[in-house]
Image (tube, rainbow, N blue to C red; front, side):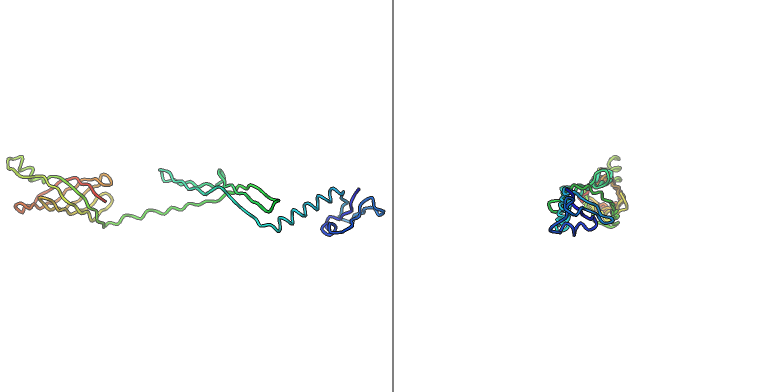
Length: 211
């Protein structure tokens, strides 16, 4: 048994209450551009039309269990997933008809914001201990002098690892440049004013900073 359907007009033909089959008194004669379908083909067309209508009327739902991961390593390199080698997996669902997994490849661009330079003027508090060099020489020559001192230091200026600080100590006040050997430790030296006798001196010391 065959059904006479003209394909360009199958929407109209599918809506007819009494379609004509090939075993009817009038045989199926397709118009130019048309084609005769069997009843099974007609049912398949109706089913496809119903599915298309459901797709058209149903909302589209996109879900994913993946997330965008940004990884920075010890060399400052940054990695982002979602590229061609590791796409993100999405699920697209439209009604009861379409339920598909989709791989999404993103074009990712990572922008780096450089760290601003440290300001030259700052306030870093240090504890330092060292010697007063002329007093040490006098002690070696038999003149008993106290040659050691400890200071509370205020580092107020720096260029890179080189800094400048003023120091208030037990036996002297001093000022001089310093050199950071690590983040919080360094060496320093410079001019010192000894309280005992109001003498000028030279100091050499190591320091530890608290900030």
